[in-house]
Image 1 (tube, rainbow, N blue to C red):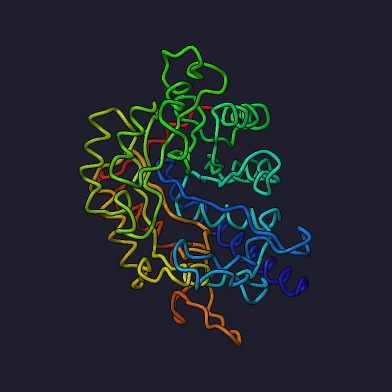
Image 2: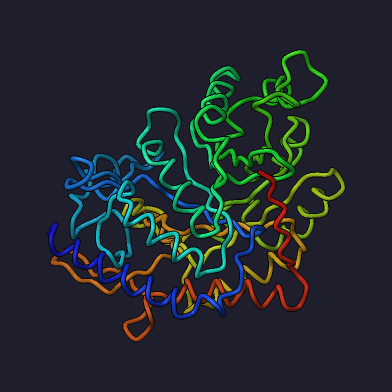
Length: 378
């Protein structure tokens, strides 16, 4: 398995290196207004000592106990995802994989990689410096998609200080107006009074205009989350979910009014688009939220709905969230005894969604809907 995977990685890397060299002169620059959510939580025994995330648990239902205690996937050929990655199971700590991914993201025209981060000493913190180094080599930037559930503002401030000490000096870190850019996935788990105490500039405990200040983006899922972000002192909002209609915030028909609210209140608005959604291997009870890729048409429609709002930025969910089937990373057809994986189409290039992303970004840049404003100050 290890030899086979290594050979495949070498081949993938060779193909992408060759392609990059041959077309470097004609590839347009990346767009720093386009961000993609990236997951560095995958591990394999050969690199990390065990499978991580490829062996995902089959998640229990919150109300129907018949779905509980279903166990987990072993990893290897049988993973917790409806699609199967082109390189097979990989380690997010493998520099060859990180480089391959940065090449693919650059090819897609995306400028900023929003790295899922679960805090100091977490699996996702092991290789942040490597991500920053390699992203910087390819002209890309890294932002933090902060995911822990905070009970106190002190915990959050400690994480910001850790990031400042360890990563803020790196040229690969994405900054807007000189400040690090942070997505806060579980922002609503902490009440607005606590957020106010550190995000409003006129409080005695404010972090504004201190070394750990940043651009803080709150998750908008429920109808009132825009108001929550405003009163809490956040700088903007993002929708994240790739399943149109899953929540108020991810429902594209709501984006126009959400965008208006954000503009009226001086908030950054970041609608998030995805190529499709399917998570029934880890949530077999969640078929209602599956969204077919429809050979790229679903992606096109979501992207069009986002750009029609003239947003400040667009988020792409995701580069490699395999558990929820939102990835644009190349996937291949695969069949095992117990399951036949979804694929992009047997006659479709595994890089279809990499190329599709580049085409969509380029199309909307050309008509002036979404100019590339690379406001990144380090």
